[in-house]
Image (cartoon, rainbow, N blue to C red):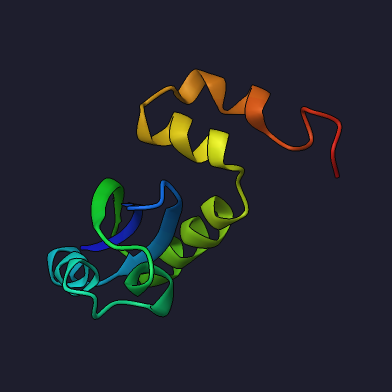
Amino acid sequence: MIAMYILECGDGTYYVGSARDLDRRVEQHVAGLGGSYTRKRQPVRLAYAEEFTRIDEAWQREKQVQGWSRAKRKALIEGRLGDLPALSRTARGNP
C-alpha cells in the first residue's frame, strides 16, 4: 500500500508527504533523515495517514492536503470531516 501522511512537527507545524513504505519513511523522519523541513523541526510524530493502491492517487491527495490551511489539516487529523467544507478557502471567500 501507498500512503499519504501528515506529521506533526515539534514546532506545531504539519508536514504532508506520501510514501510507498509508510513505516520506513516515518522512521526516517523521526531519525532526522527525512526532508530538510522535518529535520529542522524535531521531534516529529505521525498524526494521520490514508492508504491508496496507486502512487498517483496518494500523490494527488498529498498535493490537495498541502494546499489546505492548518485548521483544515487539523480537522482532518481529528476526524472532523464535517468541518472540512466550512474550512475551505473558497467557503471563506478567499480565492
